[in-house]
Length: 457
Image 1 (cartoon, one colour):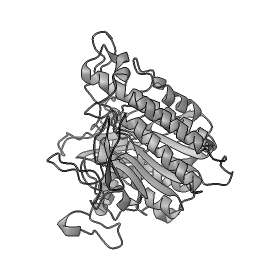
Image 2 (cartoon, one colour):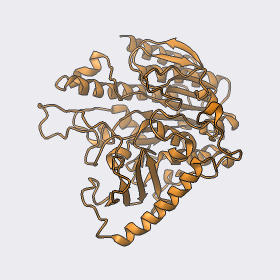
Image 3 (spheres, one colour):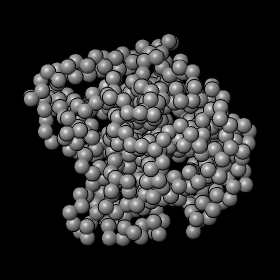
Image 4 (cartoon, helix red, strand yellow):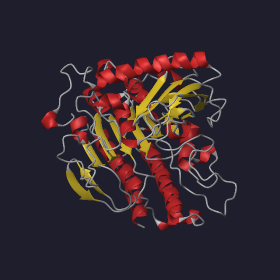
């Protein structure tokens, strides 16, 4: 098959270009991986009833498995903006799916480039304007392509892709053959190899389109799920192919001799889909993607926000499991500390914290709560307790309060039993909300909000 050939070529390529092992004082390479719509429970290491994810399982066993990691929002574009900025999405102009990020934002890619890294984006971008008509051209000449946000090189698509994709290669369309997940990793390894030859550390972002609709997979990956309906079968098969690509990435980094000094951070952009079935041949198995958590993609309950996450860095992290609450907004502050980036490279008003200390030990608690705001939904997570008003609620609807450790299914609303806790958290959320409102006006930018050509920046 084409995908097997692509994998073989990638393996041979990295073997030929294998370099000397990383020196002790070299800055770490950083690779950020993000699945698209992969639910918290869709891994082998969480005991999924059907899926086998041997490469993610191996990564979890060798790195830091984060059991309480949260997407910055329960949807695609907003979460991607939080990764690149360390700020909640509304501050950045990425209010909902299809919005473009403000070009005035300080981005992680620019921070790495200023630190001497080669920077590259591979895969789904979705931070440039997505047209309501469905006509979503490849990132190219538009003013919000990855090159305009700090990436030296990109092989990207505005939105969705599956088999035999066409990507924008730094603005020039290029056709590929095979499974998109494996293509992205093969091309990322090619780029990393070239930069390694040039003596430059690499910051690479690989944003998969799997397992988002529309689904597409090869028959051999669908075969283990033959008892499922067509959509569910292909959905699961996409995760299998993505997992295999992660195995190819880990193998490639080892063959290049840089695995020990490369931090690989895997997560998902939001919770799983609500209508993935396990079929009548699997009675008693919950027909969802989020396990015992409540809600799905778009929800501000745990199932919409909590996502599978692993950080592997053999030279910097000993294998263990953590229940420390963290989010995609923490990625930028953490990498400032880990990679020695300029602390001023992030906007002074940001919402994440460095979790580099979690790499070594388990803090007693998180000192700064995590705020979530997108598409009308709100949540405020203070360690074990979460105040939430879901996205479809009327703005006048009451908030709900849950202890997400004792009650991960969020069945027992504590808003009346714990009025003092609820009042304190509501006051904190309101203050944070006012700060976000201020950011939306452009108050965080020295020049104020710039509106080019009558459009949002």
